[in-house]
Image (spheres, rainbow over the protein chains, first blue to last red):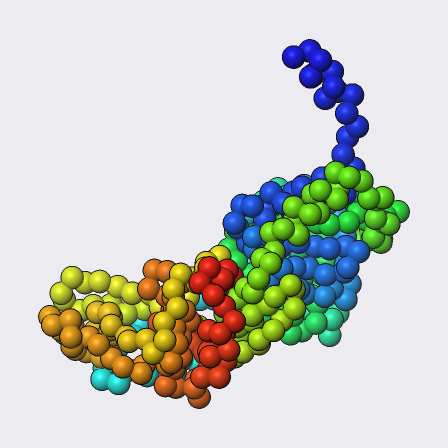
Length: 193
Length: 203
């Protein structure tokens, strides 16, 4: 028993890259949808069971922290070394359920209007203070509005870290439409100096 | 007059201060460059293998409901790409009777082909009658419909199938009762390529 404990203590810690892969393996075995941001490949992936379902190439990735009174918080050191959970789109996708009216030769589904267009920018908000801000490559990144600045001042409902992903307009819309509820998020690769 | 001027001056200073505070509040971006990958280790290689083993070795089906696209992939390569139709998301409520309700969504998640049928016969469920304002028949024989599902069906559980359609003009739109519809040629190709047990990923 003591020998086993000593052996564990003596074992070298796995490198962070291997730990990241272990987290992906755990997510793959969970059977739940998750997002993986591959920093070296510059892409976001929607994954289920270890299979990449969709890849969203990122034209830009930027990390930002809240700044209050001209003082910015330091980046969250371990943001690439953990699994973020409870991800949900903000604003939430509008899902209006249309009720079918019984009638002979029912073709109402074919007459449904197309879903409303996704917003031009949105966030995927995770528990514990990470926001993925998704913006289109064809539009300037939005500046925080007055409400958001006031929220930043008070520190209420503010992410500790914001990761901005710049996607093509098509990918931005398709990610919004296919985003599963309560999605998890993990990272491959590490930001350099 | 003097008091009013002082008041206006104080209000101006306060407004300027607030504006300054708000300007100094926002987000600060930090440079982000991917660090070089760590050198390979036996443990890392083992975890990479375990991850790679999660991807099916044979063909597997990926269905994107947002785009109404179905792909059959093998070894990471797309071998069939087809326009499909997925669930409409509509709701049907039964007036009177048992007051049942159906939501015509295609389920998301991981499934597998459980059985394959040639020339499948559709045993119309109750909702297929109720949506047409007709009482479901008591005689099971009155539920049988030939040809509605096309030439093949791949059943993946809970009443859901990948099957054909009489309405190919609607492919690419979310119009089904939850099943996945394919065009004739693509359905035949998927049927040929995907044995029972083929994993299906729907998102």
